[in-house]
Amino acid sequence: MNPIRITAVCYYNTLPFIYGIMHSEKLSGYALSLDVPSECARKLLTGEADIGLIPVGALPKFEGYHLVSDLCIGADKDVKSVLLLSASELSTIKTIYLDTDSLTSVNLVRILAERYWKINPEWKSLALLKGPLSAHEGKVLIGDKTFGLSKQFPYYYDLAGEWIKHTGLPFVFAVWISRKPLPASFLNEFKAALSWGVNHRENSTIMAQQPHISEQELVSYLTQDISYPLDAQKQLGMELFLDLLSRRQE
Image 1 (cartoon, rainbow, N blue to C red):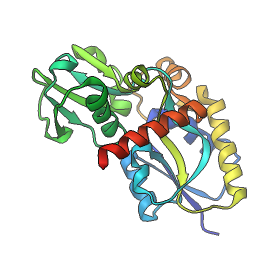
Image 2 (image 1 turned 90 degrees about the horizontal axis):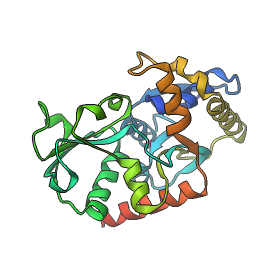
Image 3 (image 1 turned 180 degrees about the vertical axis):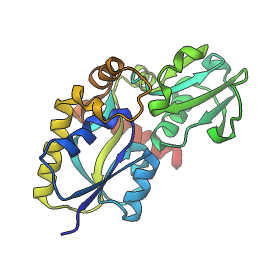
């Protein structure tokens, strides 16, 4: 039988999942690729992967999908790795540059701006930003490259924390899905491997390549800042986000 092709995000927050898949000895018959969130979504859409850790903001692109795990990349407080960094206060920001590695973060900051911050900035690709931010500019950054950056800007806003402050619900950045049913035996092993990885996430730091932060900071991030269970409150937060996203696209 051909291996089940898995695409997972290549950020620190996914280390427990990768650690479980590769080291739990609970899963076999798989091929794993590590990608940025947008590429995970593309691979699953094109059939280049069978299971993916997919940004919630990309879910509307799928006509149908199956949740294959009750674990996710989520936050019930500031997540510290999805940030709006700015030279100005929110009310005076006129331009925001977007990190397009993740549709979730792009759509989250747009929803926050329109519905809760009540600002109407010009949106530009981060690729167009060639130097430091000017006055009244901000940029959204996600993932490993955000660590340590908040201290370098006069203002920074944690997008998960902003969502929670305004909605009272946690936020879900990515979930595990497939586009078609997969063998129950494989899915049971897959779930067991992910759970093992999360339960041993203090040890998953060995999977980090060229870490930007100390091991102590990374352990704290994985154990204190990322919330992995896809519980009822997170599902409500995800449903609200998808509802607000659908209204934006109407």
